[in-house]
Amino acid sequence: MQTDRTPPQPTAPATFAAAVAAAETALRPLFDPTPLQRNALLSDRYGADIWLKREDLTPVRSYKLRGALTAMRHALALRPGARFVCASAGNHAQGMAYACREFGAQGTIFMPVTTPQQKIQKTRMFGGDAVRIELVGDYFDHSLRAAQAMAQDSGSVFLSPFDDPDVILGQATVAHEILDQAVIAPDLIVLPVGGGGLAAGVTRLFAERAPATRVALVEPMGGASLHAALAAGHPVTLPAVDNFVDGAAVARIGDMPFAALSRFTADDLVLPPEDRICATMLEMLNVEGIVLEPAGALAIDALRDLGERGRLAGRQVVCLCSGGNFDFQRLPEVRERAQRHAGVKKYFILRLPQRPGALREFLNLLGPDDDIARFEYLKKSARNFGSVLIGIETTHPGNIAALNDRLEQAGMDWRDITGDVVLSEFLI
Image 1 (cartoon, rainbow, N blue to C red):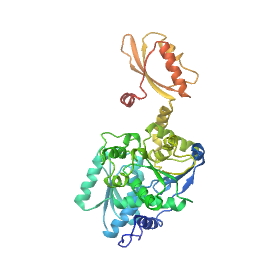
Image 2: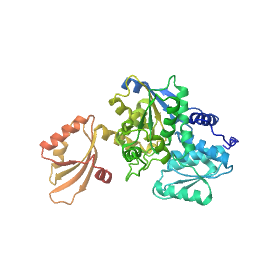
Image 3: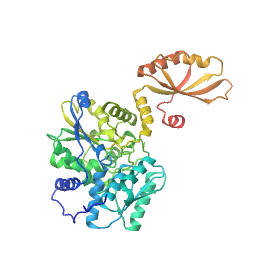
Image 4: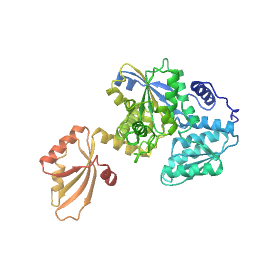
C-alpha cells in the first residue's frame, strides 16, 4: 500500500551506529523486529547457548527488505518522485518490490528468463502495480547489464543488492536488533556472505557497539568469492559458481563490502559443501519446523565446523538465518543431495554381461536394507555387455561399503559416479 512516509532530507549522524539506529527507527512503522530465538536442539548438540535471528520471518522472508527500504527511503528524500531499477532473481527483487509499493514509487526489476515462476509471481505480489518485471537473458549477468543500461539511459536510481552504502546501512539494522534483544552481547555471531552487504553492515556495527564479539563468516563452497578476494587482496571474479545456494553464490564480492571485510582472514571463514547444507535444511524443516532456503541455512550448517574448531562450547552464539524463500519443488533435489552427503545414496555404472541371470546375480548382492532407486539401461546394443545406471538407497553408509566389497569379490565391472560432477549432471 502507498503511504506518506517518505522522509524529509536526512542529516548525517555522527557515527555509523547512530546512523543504523536512525535507520532501524525508520523501519519500525513498516515491519516488526524479527525474533531472536534460543534453539534447544543446537544448544544441546554443541554445548553452547545457540540463538537464531529469524530474518526468514520478515514480510518478504529475507533480510533484503532492510537494505531496499533504507536505500529507497534515502533516495526519495534526495530525489522525490525518482524511479528505481534493479536486477535480481530472488530476495532483492522482492525487497525492492515491497519498498516500491510501500513508498508509492515506480520500479523496474530485471530477472533472467530462467527465473522460476514462483519467484516472479512473489515479486509481482509484493510490488503490485508499482513494479514492472522484465525477463532478459539466460543468466543474472545479462539481466544486470540490462538494468544498469536502463538506469543510465532513463536517469532511474539503480538499487544495488549489496554494493551501496545505504543498502549496507539498512542491512546493519539486523545487528542493532540483535544487540537490543540479547541480554548480553553474544560471544560469537555467525553470518552468511554472498555479495557481502549484510556482513559488511553487521560486522561494522558490532565493531562499534560490541567489539568483544567474534565473527564467523560463511560462504558456500561453490561460491566463495570473499575467500578468493582475501587470498588475492582485492575482489576477483570466480571463473565458475555452483548456483545451488542461490542467495549467496556470488561470483564477485562487492567492492564496498570487501573494504569492510578485508580485515578478516581465512581462519574467520567457513566454507560448507552444498550437499551438507541440504542436510541442515532438512533437519530444520523436519525437526524444528523452520523453512530455510539454502543461503538461510548457511550459518546453522557452519556450526558443525565451528564446533570442531572448538569455538562453540560454553559460548553464547547467534546464527543469522538470512532467508526462507524456499520453493518446495526443489525438495526432492535437497533430499537427494542430503542423502549423498550422508553416504546413504550412491549411483553406479554397472557393466552386465548380456546373458540370462546376470541381473539376478547383481540383485543377490544387495543387502537387506539396500533399495534400487534408479535403474536404466544406458547401452543395450553391445553384443556381450550392456551398461546400466543404478541408484542405491540404504539406511547406513556402512551398507554401501559392504556392497562395494561384495561387488569386488563377485568380479563385477562397476564404477561409482556419485562424486563425478560431469557424469552425475549428465546422467542423473
